[in-house]
Picture 1 (cartoon, rainbow, N blue to C red):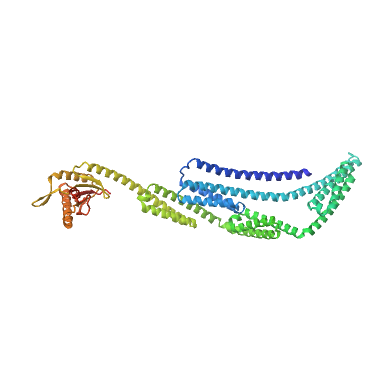
Picture 2 (cartoon, one colour):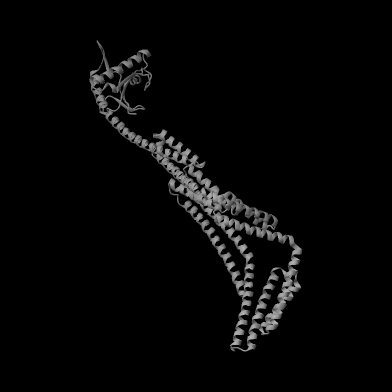
Length: 577
């Protein structure tokens, strides 16, 4: 193995770094422009009407993306994007609560995008750190490779000796040629060893701390290589061995001088590196055992401590870095220790998650049922049931938020039940109203066909008004005039045509005379008309009632005879409302 190996290793790490950077760069760009295109599309075209369930699913997706980002500690590596994602999700939930569904789904989508961007940036930062660590290890890999070269050279030497001796025994080559092959192997081994020692001296900063000895070792190594090229094998071996010895001396001197210059710092740095490595190993073991799930709080403490340790290391605060790394290792070990106990609770946790999912589903279905009830007009025609459904759903959401999932499901089901009852009641009410409106229309049309009456719709129903002067005085008292009886017969036929409605006969006078007498007069004539309808026209008595108001409810002015005549009336009111 030669210098090509080192270049291959270096190129491999550089390609890893470039590939990771390009991957995360284009990931962020795609998410960013996807968000812009979505927003632009919404600005050009009016947003379509969305379903409640679709918005709920979008908000759930955004929550999951934020949870994923939080698990990767995005609040440390991409705090701005993570905070924006949380704020945008909050806006989405506010719009959802206000039933502004188009705005809610837009905010939910943006929250999802921002959370994914935060996650991408976090992973990029972690990848960059791993690359930096890999760079630090490149020289170690290189020296492992160079050590392999020395081993290979030794093997080649041994093989050459054996081959030469065997060949010499078998008279395949001359003794001189065999000796030359052995010398070549010795020289190559010595040069390989010298290269390793010289390079190690360079890493130990011998050009600075042992300049003279390093330069001498380097000069001897170059002369050894020239001697090898000239096939002066013994000379090459001698020069290489001297170079290696000189390089070892340069290493010793460089170490001593470097330690004298900054011994304490180097020691603390090495200690910090070892502590961080052990902490990373402990965290990896904890992660493999799912400690991040079963002992999340302790595991997160370990992660935070290691992150803080790395920050301290980058700031050259090696002592604090080592201390934090030890804390991280201890926390990771503690997290690993509780995994066994926590795993026993996994089944119960899964059951809770299932109940939670059922609660979320029940609340979503209840909200959908409430919207359907509102669209059916239940908030007006079935107000009591609609309010009960709404109240149950609000309580279900509160129970969901505090983790009481079984109670949330029960309340949500109550909400669905009441919402469906409200829908049924609203549908019945609307159907009855529709039928009643048709009856009112028919009665109005029929009533308008009756001569000598005035017809109008009131808050009670349909009022058919006839002149008060429908009676004549006789020896036995007042009797209904003969010429008005055909009109009364038509009214009676109309009443009998619609047998499902009660009728009230209201008597009214003008303000002439005594109020007490007027009240009695209006009541007597209303009773007279009631008896006529019952005994003469055959209208069932249980459908009829009468009342006299005297002059309390005028419909025209009493200042002239025309107005007073209008006020003297009998109203036959069919109670259709």
